[in-house]
Image (cartoon, rainbow, N blue to C red; front, side):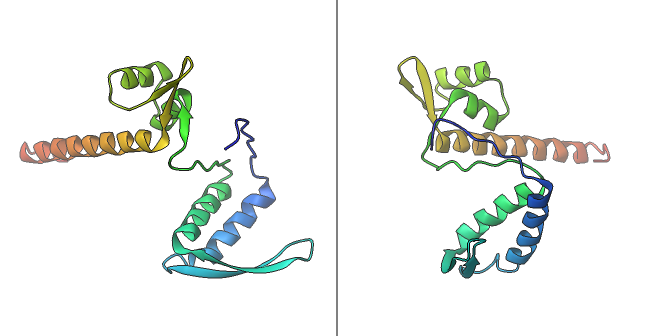
Length: 150
């Protein structure tokens, strides 16, 4: 991953192309692999095979583009900045730094900068989401037990 991030917001034409492509490819979402024929605007043609999980990633990308969203792909083992980690967790950077310093999420220092592995941030997010869902389930059960109509 390069240090410079380039954001490309899809044009209206690209949004429509993504919608059409997504509809077509979604017919193959449950297969273990798919063979594609490619034909570029330069006249080049090729055949390729994609594993099912790669097709699912492509469908996810097309879903975002079809909504007009810019996207980026980050390798699972990639180290990210504290700001990127905070953005993923939807928290402030100072709050994230407190999580790091308290040992809730592992990190390493590169000079004066903290770096965190994407997989550690995602694992923390899953853990917090599980706890949040358990608490909500418990509240809903208590509400039902008390006859509060939820």
